[in-house]
Amino acid sequence: MEADHFKESLLLAGAGKMGGALLRAWLDQGYDPRKINVIEPNPSPDLIALAQAQGFALQAPSRPPEILVLAIKPQSLDEAAAGLASFASRGTLLVSVLAGKTIANLSAKLPQARAIVRAMPNLPVSVGRGITALAANAAATPAQREAAEALLAASGGVEWLASEDLIDAATAVSGSGPAYVFYLSECLAKAGADLGLPEDVAARLARATVEGSGELLFRRAGSTPAELRESVTSRGGTTAAALEVLMAPDGLAPLIARAVQAAKQRAGQLSG
Ligand SMILES: NC(=O)c1ccc[n+]([C@@H]2O[C@H](COP(=O)([O-])OP(=O)(O)OC[C@H]3O[C@@H](n4cnc5c(N)ncnc54)[C@H](OP(=O)(O)O)[C@@H]3O)[C@@H](O)[C@H]2O)c1
Image (cartoon, rainbow, N blue to C red; front, side):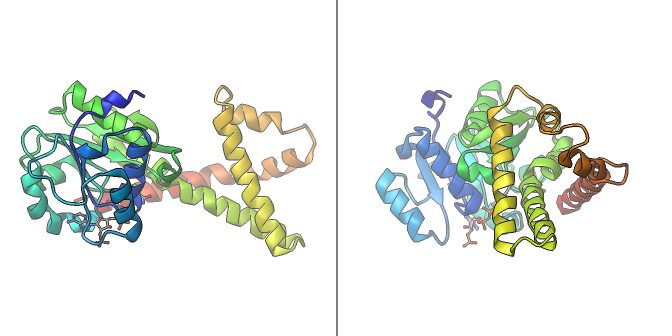
């Protein structure tokens, strides 16, 4: 990605876990700190030190920015909207990472903003390995879509969705997904301890297995997950014995499908 994507003035509202991770990624990617303002009611000492070291302003800008990134909690939107309204002009691109807040909700709260991009990042953005699903409204120009994409691509991959309706499904897969993988590591550790391994040893074995497998998926981008699985499964071996259980009709696939369905349903309930 070219650093000259980062030519727009930008206001980040909310520099907590997600906003803070995005901010650090932009700075790492060469976004000009003099074009960044951050509004954060209770800035952490780390954020204050970062502002001093990098030179971005930890205060509201004097005029509406070209891009307003909303990274407050969804439940703070109603309260925050009045204070933010003056920063969303007709020419401002609004990029929201708020889970469950639809483009219609955002438009109702910040009616001055015409171009809106909804983004659903996930926690690995904090280590530059996130994946973000994006959906734009019709008012967003190609240049604005490109600017939103560059902002999110600073911290990992991006996938445009054909319609905003698919955001809940993306939330269920990749937004909530890191927790499923952490839980897999927990389950594997418990199963190992149940087989007699000391708990700490089982936890380290399970954790490193998930870490290493994720790294392999990342590095062998030319292979599908199924190909990687097949490459470590010999006929009649130990892995095959385990996969026979996991891949049975009542195995992992229907369980994951139910879990993802529950997450999608919840995302729908939280909208509004
Ligand atoms: N964390 C994730 O993995 C993840 C994934 C996808 C999407 N998201 C979305 O990212 C958003 C932020 O989540 P988070 O986990 O980063 O939450 P968080 O750590 O609580 O960050 C939100 C920050 O916004 C601040 N804030 C509240 N009102 C504000 C206002 N009017 N103006 C400016 N800042 C304000 C909060 O300050 P106070 O704490 O002092 O109120 C807090 O520091 C949420 O909408 C969430 O749906 C998060």
